Length: 487
Image (cartoon, rainbow, N blue to C red; front, side, top):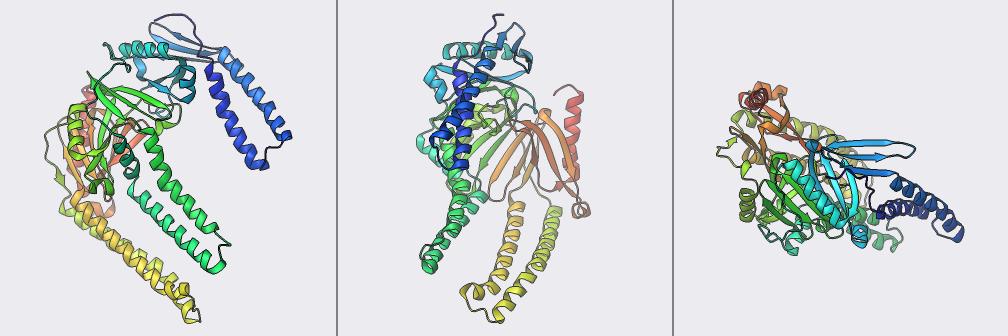
């Protein structure tokens, strides 16, 4: 490594200024509702100040790639000196946005293995593309103590993910409850628009537009965002490193060592399960991105046929495969869940009784509209449907939820509408909380919440209701391996 002091590429001035200027422009537009000449002149003044500020910040910020660490030093009014030892770096990745491609540059994203810095990278440095690629390779060799492949190498991916796969993933990877809410708002929008057209000849479409906006926010926007983010998805493994490449507008090149993975999840939603598709998600620390996508857990496989997903699981993360025998929830769990169902149903009936009486009194006192006629039946119907949903969730929970404990790994299987199988390593567990409620203690069962570090900071995995000694055994193994220095 060179001890020479470097600056980021000057294009960072344009990127930072443009980002802030767009935000100011949006605020100004909603504030004044027009962009007349006086307001344009007024906008030019802060824009010039922004350019000068970002120019000075760029000119007085220096980077040094030393033999043992990376130093980022800013010598502005508010001075900053950040030292990043190579031994603490979890991953170094390459991102290329629109501005990067216009100027022939790349962002070098450096992350440390820390839950505190999980969402935002420790350093985001913009350099000329070839230099950024070379530094990425050199840093990767240092942190992995081995020769690392380059993102530029032509490597045949394990599975070809087509554009159709990306579209299907965008459409059907949205959580089922979110899709149901979106469908509710879409139906409400259609009903409101119909009522407005019939009663007021289209004079008031406010309710319809609000519902339509909520449908767009809950269903359409997440689907489109996933399609753009995972476009051109590729995954492959070389040695102990997994490589991901994807992105339509911003290009993401992500790599991480297999030792950085704390857990693996095989997930599917209700619709994707009906289509026989599932995806694989990894809990990894140290892959944050400066564009806000650091809050996204990395997928090592988007929605694909179950058989292909299983093959990818074996080829990409064989370290998370073990022989075991899954344990269903015991009879005590059935008793607890039935007790909870009775209590929840009683509370629901008590809460809904009063509005049902009010609706009936309103109808009996002379209400003759369609809404007044339907209200006395709507509340009991909604109550019955809610109780049926609770009973259904209990039956599915008893059938689906499982636990399996091995020597190195353990597994939780969860989900009512959306399912996930989580394989975790004892060595990567931060904490285990065994929870025993009054009913659970009565029937000798408990649930567990396992805390791990992830790309979103700290995440937790919950189990179903199992025997206390089985869940306590997980705690004992975690502590035993920790005292032996296996962590």
